[in-house]
Amino acid sequence: MFPLERQKKIIEILTIKKVLKISELTDKLNVSVDTLRRDLNLLTKQGKIEKIYGGVKIVESKFGESAIDERMISHLEEKERIAKTCSEWINDGDCIFIDSGSTTYQIAKYIKNKKNLTVVTNSIPVITELMNTDVELIIIGGKIRKNEQSVVTFDYLFNFNELNILKAFICTSGITLERGISDYNVEEALTRKKIIERSKEIYVAADSTKFGKDVTIAIAPIEQINYIITDENVNKDLINEFNKTNTELIISE
Image (tube, rainbow, N blue to C red):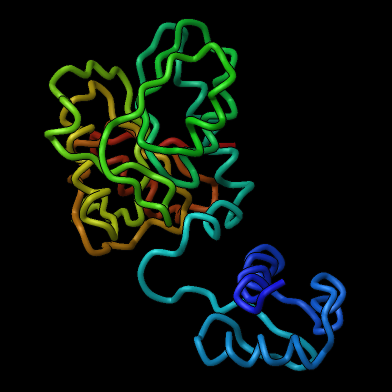
């Protein structure tokens, strides 16, 4: 295995395990301690890992958007419960949009047996999950964001005016009552804005860590959102505040 391949494998393992002993890594990679230390020294200089006593740990993202692979395993139980609750709002015969994102992706696992369902999406993992089912799939045209495994659209490649979406399930990186929902990437935000314009009902699927954050790009004010589906760890004061709005806060069990 070449050094770059080995270093990529180290990051992949630590993304899942978070912390590992040196001995565990040498066993997994089948390399000597000296070889491993050279890789770890380079990754430490790059700021990707941090050395701790007897081992190493992944450096968590403090600013900006973390990678989709990392978010797929972060708060997974909460995201699965949120997705299951979302699926209960999806009926046979619906035409829905499923956004790219680690929470909205989980929805695809719960809707495979729906009848006459049409799913419009910009998520490659959602397409992969539903490929061998009876669900009718439409993927929007545009540019591939490899790190997000998503498609960000351009008007000249996809005619949004032809879409007739009943329910859109949107993900977000930030939610505040004052500023609404927001995201880090301008292209993803523009795609969501377009979908919100063309959809009859808007559902935001977001775990409780997204509340209180107002990140780089505004997507939509709270009054444009019909439902926000989140987990039971959401601040109880926020629940009271949402009761004063027209946006229904749904807590997944």
